[in-house]
Length: 330
Length: 103
Image 1 (cartoon, each protein chain N blue to C red):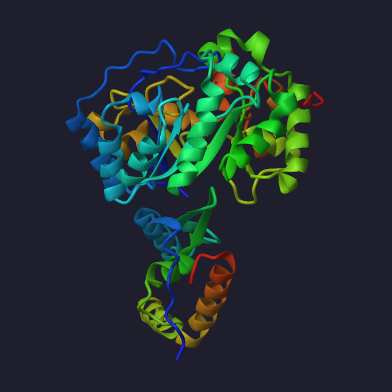
Image 2 (image 1 turned 180 degrees about the vertical axis):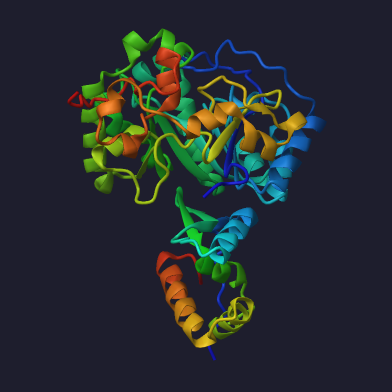
């Protein structure tokens, strides 16, 4: 089906952040922030185009001064509102404020089961304790809390402990995100990223454990199709530019937060026009196999895997996902 | 008397009128439309597409119409036998209830 607009918009309202994480895709990026009146015009545009979900990321959304007002406007217009936070600023009063602002779900990053892993990755002592406390504050106020862990070399062997810890503190779903080699993630890739066989081993283990895990496990990696784990009827390959779109602080649209290629500006061009006519989005939707993908019999299932990862590693949309473990016969 | 069909308000959905028009045009031209969708549902992080008839039923399931009422409305809209459509409406509604999409 050809959608007239994205179902989900992932929105970076600001790149300001109180953390300096070692894998951050956006640290150092600068984007002109719009005045609140223009931000609210974008909310109107999302509602007009019947976008279903808006998720605020960043940057740290809780640093953005108008977050609650923007969220309230989106919720009042029928959008489901969520956000991802490092949890540092999220105490009980803030949790209650987020509920009042119309948030339906708040995700907190938990990247390690111990401070030695999490705090080092996040470059902020005490950050694990604050993240876990944030989960408890959210659960106490009745907000749906989720946890997000970026899987990397120093936590892959203890990811079950992360899930157990997050579940114990109130997270009902734990997202196990694939490592993106973008921004600092690209600069630190040699140290932090797993090898393709290690990614395969991790996913096989996590999929086998999922039915027994103390929280629902969620994944966002198109490469899972290689294990036959894609949902029946699910969109093949990356969903970015097919179901979802990312917005920069100045209203520029990009296929996803990890692909800094402008697809147009929703404020000046309109969301439906950007969605329908952007060459960058067309490239996301109409990939052609390159390299080892050309002889791979399951290319039709994964469509080359994560396009952002391939682009970050090689500069090409159609290059094979650098996490792919398959070695198709030529 | 059958109870009205009512969508679960927790299920996020959107209709795509241009896709519906394209499906109807294809039918008019005698083309195969298969399961081509025009209503999209998002539930539990998954996206589902509803085909022409399922989408029509879904849009009418607003809590004010019984299955018979939905079938009668669609029979008039598509000049088709109401009793045949009713069987489809009931089958779709049963599937939706099993999935938690309808009350």
